[in-house]
Every structure is written in C-alpha cells, then in structure tokens.
Length: 313
Image 1 (cartoon, rainbow, N blue to C red):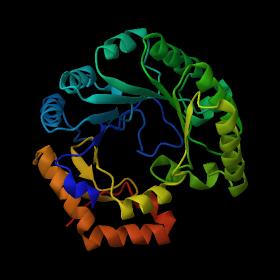
Image 2 (tube, one colour):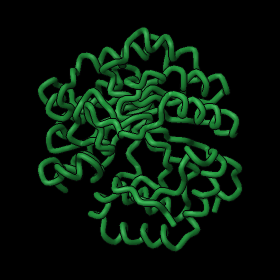
Image 3 (spheres, rainbow, N blue to C red):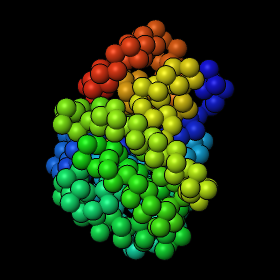
Image 4 (cartoon, one colour):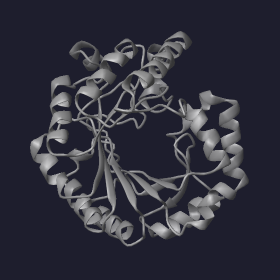
C-alpha cells in the first residue's frame, strides 16, 4: 500500500465537536444544537493533540464539526497548527463567520474556507438547514473572499433542494469560489434516519450529473467542479484498492478507519498521532476491515450503521 511508505498521514480531518448551531436534515455526523458528545476533548486535551500534530510532519489539516467556530479554543488550535506551517481547511456553515473571523484566519496558512450553501432561496435553505439564515452564509462567503481567503462552496443534494443546484453553483461562481463540491447524499447520521423523506430519486441524480457535466464545459475552468467519486460507496471502493493517507479524528479523540465504516482503530487520548497512524495502516491490512468494506460494497444500505462506532480488534 502507498500509505506504508509514508511516515505520517498527509491529511488529518479533525471533527472538533458534534455541537452545532443548526439542525440540518442531511447531517452525516448527527450534529445539532446541544448534541456535543459527553466526552469530547477538552481545551487542554485538544491543545495537546494540536501540538502532537504540529510536530508529526502532517502537511494538511481540516477543522470541522458540528460547527467548529462554536468551540471556544478553535482559534487556539488553528494558531498552533498554522504556526507549524500546516495548511488548514475550515469547514463551516457560515452562520458565525464574518469579517472578524476571516481576518483572524488570514494570519494562518489557509488552503480553503469551505462554506455550505444548500439552497439559493431562504425557503429552501431553511428547510434543509433548520435555524439557518441564507444571507448570513452569503455574507460569510463574501467575507472570506474580501479577506483574500480561498473559498470553497459545498452543496448536499436532497429532495428538498436539488432543483436549486444550478443556482447555487452560479452563486458560488459569483462569489469567486475556486471549487464547488457536491455528490450523492450520504446515508449516514441524520440523513440515514430521514432517508425515505429526503433521498433524491435516480432521475434527480441523473439530472444533477447532466447539469454538472454541462456546467463543467460552460465555466471553462473558472471554478473546479468536484463531484467524483459521486457516492460514498465509490469512495470506499477506491479506498479498498488504495487506502487514503488520512486520519479521521472524532470529537472524543478516537480515530475512524473510514467514513463509511463504524470501526475505530486508535484513541488519541492514549496514543500519539504516529502510533495512531501505524494503527490505521495495520487496520487496512486486516481481514476485519477489508471484509467490512466488501460487505458495504455489496450492501450499501449498511453505510447507515457507520456512526455506531466499534473498536477494531
């Protein structure tokens, strides 16, 4: 495996909290207001982990949630990582992001600020993201660009909003986003519970793919359209062939082997990052993980179980 040649992961995706200021119907992490895990890393533990990442040779870190800007020590974590020269990606719903936050992030090596725009009208956006204000998300996009930060826009398609996909893409282009991310709705977390109500139809997806292929020609490189692999299963199939050099860190410091799988391979409360990296590589060599991946590929509906975490043995 390619990951065997690497002394550290190339990417750490760190979910700082499961708490959020919105209750999105498509949320893959089961995040919502007041839903922080009871054993999330506290400030001291999070700072220690950030310091560990900083000296481990990791070049790129995503800070996400829930909503990461809810976390009181968010900027302290970003400071530690940024001071080590680590590129940062911030994933936010934009409700708490404005000129002040953009100016603070400008001091760090920011690879991107990713803001979710799951609708182009307030009525649709509020159905998909209960409690959300679309204008705030738009102002967040503008604040990022005005500060000179690279902007990504993400769109999660559901029955509620898929008809506004083109308008959101055009909106992202008008904001100067360099990338537009989308793909099939992930049957994980809140989305799994609401699946029968919010899953787009096969015809909806065919229309979305046709739209993306058409827009790819129209935008002529002005914005990157990122939609492959289109489904979580396709991503898992790629990982089965060549596991990504990524550690997915949960709010309590546990490390998942893969987003579609429920298996945990390490605990960063008890292990350092490089020990967790070795555990991750060992997990992908194991029959347990490879059999679990094969099962998901045969029965994609079982992705819905991926948040029922279990220790890998």
